[in-house]
Length: 420
Length: 173
Image (cartoon, rainbow over all chains, first blue to last red; front, side, top):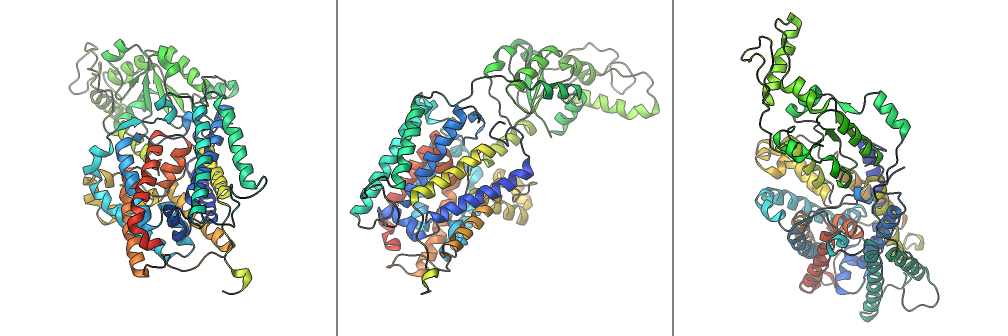
C-alpha cells in the first residue's frame, strides 16, 4: 500500500468527500478541546496572557511534521505526492500581515470561527458573515490583483530545498524551536500572572508530567531525524507483474490515435502528453500540447500520482519501455499512444480515403477529413471536397508547446483549489 | 447554570490538543496527500452566490469564471468544513461549553464587538486570498511540510497580530 492513498488511486472522488468530513470532525473536535471556540481565549494570545494558540498550533505542526518525515523515510509515503502550496513570497507576507490584523480585529481565524459558531458564539457567526462578504468583495478585485498575486514566485519549495540544508536537520531544528517557544510562552504567562493552572505546564511542576513526556518524545524522535537522511523516495522500482500483465492483455494500457484526436479537439480529458523523442525531432513536429521528455531524462522527471500521463514516441517501442518504467514507479495512470506518431500520421493527419465510399461510410469519411484539417494535415486519396490526391506528406508546423485553453487551464485551477 | 455537573469543563492540556490536531493533519496527508483548510469554503460559498446571481458578469471576471459550470459545494474543503462544524459542536456539548453568547472584553460593548467581528472577518477574507490560505491551510499545513511560503506567512501573521494588538486592547482585556 502506498500513501497518500487518494493519489495512488485507493479511493475515488466521492469517497474523498466522506474522508473530508471525517477529517473535519477530528479537526473541529480538537480545535474546540484546545479552547479555540472562544474568541476571548484566542485573543489573549496576543497580550501574552494565554499562549494556547501558539502551543496548540506548534504542537500540531511538530506532530504532523515528524509523522510525515518518518512515514516517508520508511517508504510508506511518497512525500513528493503531498501537495505544497506554491510560494509567492510578497503576497504571502502581505497576506499574513493582513490576516494577523483580521485575527485581532475579528477575534477568530476562519477555522476557529466555525467551531466558535457551532458552540453558540454570536460574534463568530457575525465574523463568518463578514468573511463571506469579504470573499464576495475581494472576488471582484481578484483579476486586477493577478499581477501581484503571481509575483515573488518560488514554485513549490520547502525551506530545506531553498536553503540547501538536509530535511532531517531542519526537522530537528523546528522541534527545538517549538519547545523553546513553549517554555518562553509559559514564562510569559507567569509574568502576566494569568497562566492557566488547569493544564499541565512544562514549567513549575515536579517530576515527569505528561506534557514533559510529550516534549521529550518530540526531542527524541526529532533528533534522530537529523541523521536519518532524505525523506524523499529514491527511484526504487517495484513491478507488480500480475497487474501489468492484466493491463496489457486488456489493452487498458494505451489510447488509440482516433480517441486522442477526439479528446484534443474537444479539449476534455486531455492527459499530460509526453513526447519521448529527441529535442530535434520534437522541434520538427509534435502533438499539440505535448512536453518533450527524451527517454534519457525520463528517470529524473517529476510526476504527480494523480495525473494521467500519455506517452508517445515515433513508433511503439520507446513508449512501451517508458510505460514500464513509470509503472514501476507506481504511477497509476500511465498510457501510451498506440502506434505512436507513425499511427498519428497515418490515421489522423494523412488518412487514406476510399474512392467511392459506401453510403454508410460517407459521414465517417467527412469526419476524417475534418479531423485531419483541424490538425493541419491532408487526407490522401478519395473524393472528399478540397482533397489533393496523394499529396506530399509534408508535416504541418509544430503547434505551440502548450494547449492554451483545455490542457493548461484545468490542472492550474485544480492546484489552486487544493490550498486553504 | 448552578448545577455542578453542568459547569463547563476545563479545556484540554494545549499540548495534547495540539498532538491530537497534529494526528488529524497527518491523517489528511496520509489519506489525501493534502492538508486542512478553513477559508476556502467561504470562497466557494461566495462563488456560488455570485455565479448564480450574475452568471453573465461572472464569465467576464476570470476569478468568478473559475466557479462557473462547477458545483462549488462539491468541494473537498466544503465537506471538511462541515465536519469541523459538527466536530466542534460535539466537543462543545460533551464539555458543556455550548452557550449563546457574544464574547468580548470587560471594557467593550456587545454592539461594538459585533461590528468589529464583521470587519475582522472581511479583512480576513482579503488576507486569505492574498496569501492563498489561512491559519489552517498555510500555517498548520504548510508549516508541518516545511513549506517556504507558509513559514514566511506564519511569521508575518504573528507579526501583524502582535503589531495590531495594542491598538485593539480595549476590545479584549
